[in-house]
Length: 308
Image (cartoon, rainbow, N blue to C red; front, side):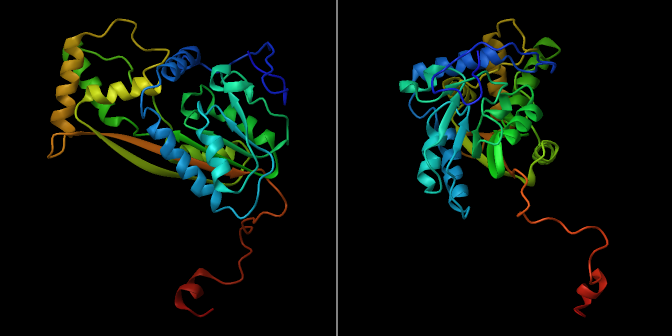
């Protein structure tokens, strides 16, 4: 299900879509697990989303302009829209989510995770928090976001980047290799910050910037980390995941290896979340442009000597 461009809030219409991208993640399973997590409502399960939303408010507050037509994409909670409001730089944001359950009162629009249901050149700010890493076609989504922006409109996005849950990945891989003689994918591949910047350029954004914020959370055991991931709806949804039930022996050994390799002096283990932040603008003639090659009037050698 998806919606027609800028359809009335709460409206859903079936659309025939053709996806030529080989899927890496099971989008239906991601949605199912996010819904399960929402209904469970575990206390503080949204700690990472709240941290990223606070960063979003700070980033917006530093932008010296006001946005009158903002939208949030697949942020799984009202946190992104609340952060936009808290920044003091924007009007109320329209929310786009993958299921009506994420939109209490029907305030928003519903779309499949591979579609940006916004009319071309209709928004001056689009925000996506912690959902792009779950997309099978990140370049395609970025291109759709770019088309939805008015000239000089801003995109701000945050996604889990390369190195996220690296300790967990290594421990699970080592335990499964030791026990079974091989391993199946259990933590999805995440985008490197340099690749993310290149994707912004490829999608046609001007002034693209990608930076990284590393968040380290400490746990008593690997099982506490996995409990939090389940509460977030962020467990393994890769298409190529093993369908065989994992054994207690496997998880016990993985937890032992995690502690042996990564525990600090206090015995607690770290879990790393590398948050890649993306920003880019829809091109506009008023934006600063790089000088053409050969157009400099002063040589680098003179500048370094201080000759002017």
